[in-house]
Image (cartoon, rainbow, N blue to C red; front, top):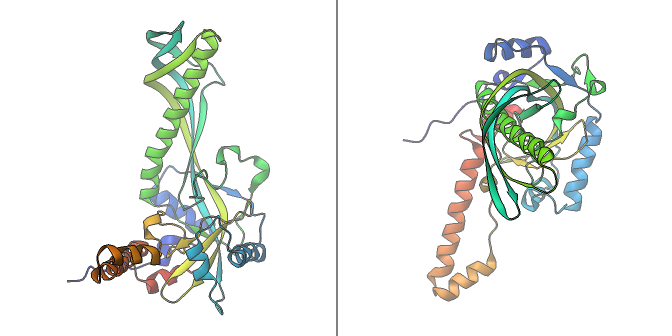
Length: 320
């Protein structure tokens, strides 16, 4: 029996206005406060022009296969303006217990665990979790350094031609793990720098282990304007997310028109290698080429299934 395909309720993905969004947010996180809205610096036409330039130039920074798919003649892309979510957590450390090691004259010195109180203004860190697919290219984990958002980047109201992506429970589950991971890494670096400064240049920090900490935290949600440029190919959808703050065109996505499904490089369509097919034919006369072709077809079908995330193309088109 074939697996049941998932259906899409657009209202679960998007809210039409801030009131509806806030109601959905507080169902998921009752204590959530009013989100902060970021100003858009880029309009739809500029975003579309930037995407078209990348496609026409076959920019090597982007997946060539997806660029080629989007370059098909006669396709008019859809442009959707969406506020995406970034979950921010601000940590203030009160005390931390740790030990550390350093080297001196070639020897490793171990310091027993100790607990210190943190003075006002020290060891305060922020973390950010994007609830959408941002820059997924190597070296670009985020669309923007969210901890550097300033008051002049904020707007009082959402723009009327935008919809708002809803936050769900999985987003907060992800943020719970991600925020603590970021906090632990930053606190460990702070302890290392703190002790290195006390040790001076003659002794080099070798390692730090944090055992416990006491901290306070508060949370907020950023609503970030994005412009999603999508090419409906009939049997596939190629989407280019454009950050409306920076104007940056981010990694093109396959069958992910809301930029909400996790990026999976293995879900991209494979390329048929004539060279490998010929090598296989030489190594295994007659059947080698056939086996390679069958393997390629299998990879193509598997990649397509992964890219759909359990939906059909017709269901995904509801999000355009």
